[in-house]
Figure (cartoon, rainbow, N blue to C red):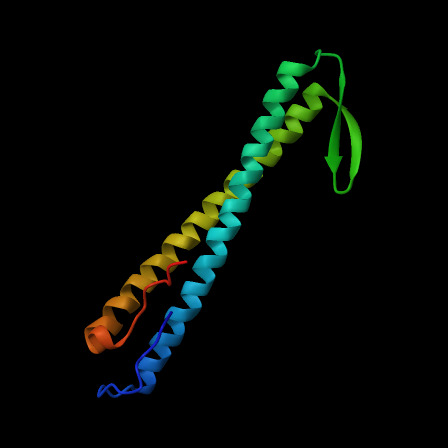
Length: 131
């Protein structure tokens, strides 16, 4: 987290405080995006597993229960595969967007870290806490 020891001799300007606050906001958003990415990547893997399982376990003319919202509807395998493909494509686009946003935030944080460490040196800690 961002901390500046109270006993430091370095004067913190309003601009410095704005940079520290911006870094903290970017860091929080970056963490949220990383969590969302994990969820979406897991969903993508589940879609792949479902599609594989459907091809292996079912006869080509069997109907497949397909979840829409909170309800299952019966679809042909072809309809289910098309629906899974559409969901996969949507998830891949969302993952791509999240990766792009993550990179932007990382670039911003790297710039802010450089500025803040240049001024405060070891008097500020912008590294994530190890859990």
